[in-house]
Image (cartoon, rainbow, N blue to C red; front, side):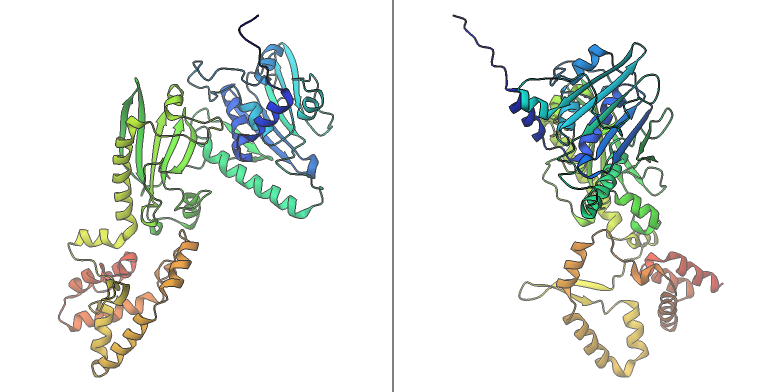
Length: 491
């Protein structure tokens, strides 16, 4: 009797299990795009066609294509061992991505590929596998006439999803709510691809990628083309005979960005959620905006810190990259170094966030003057009070010397009725959209500055001294152009 058995998995059971890897639609499409890039494609066209339950997704490329034999291997689950060495530009790892990504969204996967030797077509239909209980890889395409199985050029590949039960559901084409959800999905896919492949979409020999006929544009999470972005440092960390490259950035304060730049830096998740590490494997973004389990929180005041980490495909196992290529874990030997880097970046980001005016104050060697002060009362509760030394308040008291008691009562009333709970809820709901004082306009600001300026002159300050002091007062420090205009008008 033999000492072993062949325990062949049930085709219908295993292939249904392969649908449960946890792909999002955008991650699934990105996984197919990986294959196109690995095949040397320079043009990739993605189409998401709405037709209710008959909706179709296709990814077309002009890569090198696959022969009959190559396509058979590529369509076989576990076509390559994750332990096999990969070329530098190969974005695959497990030999599962094409199948698991596709099955996670659709019950039918068709691949048509062309090489100089001819065109090969193979199709997985999960309903056929379920009915027969066999791993029947079909040699014909789907019957849907709207599916274009022709590659872009003499060589290339078309990946098509039909029977998109998980992507769309069992809905009619006229279901407006389902259609709206589909349109929202297209937007998510767009943002995800523009971020995931942003390095491939720029520079010499860049990749051309479109979604439903619209070109995709790279989303640079570090705003590296903005002059106010700070590259804090660049390091190379030796690890297992390779180099892990790290670059730490602090993005510009909101006051230095145009509305369009604010929206661009916002990303798909918002300023607060986009902070953290950006993990790249062979230039492909795996993880964006994550502190990688280092015990650091996504605080509002550190939201400008973003750090790029690059590692080669040979370190996949050390980083425990998952099949979806959307999660990884920091190798133990690198934890201390990455924590150190993160602390420095967060500290510098906090300095920029806390107040742009403080930078101006340090340049003028004068203390920064805030309008509100935080203190703890006898009961241990945090409270806020108006800074009585603020030049605006001092000028108000000086201009109404006979009514100081009345003004003090009004200030106390304001302090005791500050809606801290309401403010906290509002900030939590819109961390990325805190308003600029005076709405960024200067119409209402100028009279207040002139009011303070006149009071300082009356107290014996020279014009330059008064303006130097105004330049470090909250919120005037955020409007240096107004202060400078007043300075020039005094000459």
